[in-house]
Length: 230
Image (tube, rainbow, N blue to C red; front, side, top):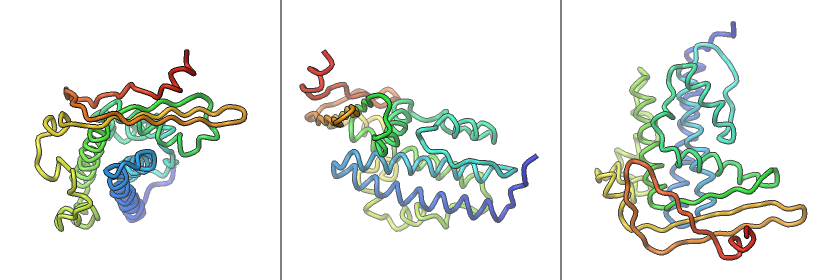
């Protein structure tokens, strides 16, 4: 048996994760909306990770190790399952895969094999907004402390422009309509050789995608990369 997780200790740790998660999220929104994609992906990954840790902490009965990152997503899932709160079952599978890879590219000197990432920028932002709103609502619908004290809820009340800009959830837009509006594709290929590292980024032009409940994968990569793979 582990040591019981004191209520005040849980409250402090849980709200800390929510606070840090929101800070990463709002920074990720700014970066992604301004085409700093790789940097935005890294913060989007840590934002969702910290919200998941908040779910875990608020629901643990005993102390145990939970400081896993998105490169060890299965460990986080196992803990969520243990507290009967695996909210990730509701997540978009491509969105989760991108978050897993996004954490790995922060430390690409340790990559054991090439990483490919391809998605549509507006769709990814929409899925990020949907996911954070879902997690905020889930966490504080199950906590007696309520949601009113979080930075996210304060920003909603104040209609903070950094949160509301291009946010279909808070602007009460239809998700399918938002996901199907003209969008830009983004792709990244990253590999580490014995001497050099190589990175290829391709931005597609304006295009429309159908949305059937899952974001679309962008499959175009630079010509140099294509030649290297032949």
